[in-house]
Length: 181
Length: 103
Image (cartoon, rainbow over all chains, first blue to last red; front, side, top):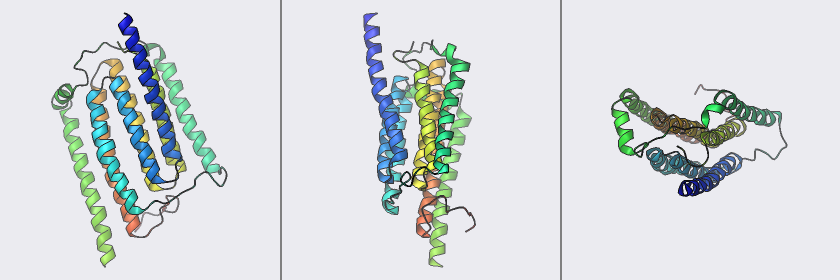
């Protein structure tokens, strides 16, 4: 019992650190003027989210998050930002415009709405989580689910990625033809 | 059982991330930062999916989160292609001025 409470305290500590890093880096992404710093802050956000996934015993998703997002996608982002060149944009200097005020109100209302709906509809049922065994979230378990229950989703995902790759190639080649003409 | 904070705490962080991303999408004008804010919104939804998956002891939420990751990779592929195309045509990097889609 003592070991469980000590483990709970440790999980709380990790949760507080990861959650704070997550929220702070999310705010940093939105508020930095240089897109390069925003992308670096998003890498921190993705890393702290992977820690939260680990606390929720989603090991494979956490590993995929670090590999796919923080690895591949963000490196592509950084390459493109370096290619386009950093453009400083100062969104908050010339006083709050009505657009900014409306956007802050809209975002805050989305946040409050989600919290209120969760509190009203699911608040009482969220206290007792199901017991899961050690294989929950492991790569083998995910792979078995993907190839049995969710085979259609798995195949459709591959088609989505293929169409996106074709779209990226078409966007690139179209502009190149226009430039030479 | 779930050690440490309950699922509701994770959902709070997910809601905050979604709100932050929505704010970035609405306020920022650089298309690259709009894409980054979209990633934050998708990650907030992913965190909620994984928290509910753990709560229910059901793997469908994690499968859905992995599908969301694939869709996010596809979205980044097309979005970055658009940004590079804008840069090659010497168009302004401001989503407020890019209001016409005809080429």
